[in-house]
Length: 96
Image (tube, rainbow, N blue to C red):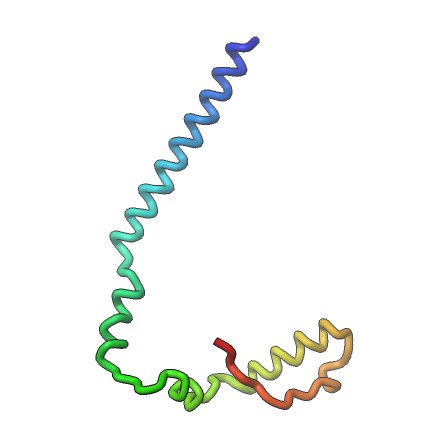
């Protein structure tokens, strides 16, 4: 009876070790095939000098502002249990 338990545990842990090895190999393969995003973005950041990054972010408009307002209003109305027409958005700022 005890040998059956030990053989079962051995098989389970052997399977887990094989699974860890497969996942590690897949990770190394993906890192080798897919370029790193930080390396690809580093030259573009170095070539574009920005004096004050906070002011450049404030100058950029929010893309799809109307769609964001509608989505936020619907989410707040759903959470509060009220109608969307009862929600009035006064301002919308991006937080980083």
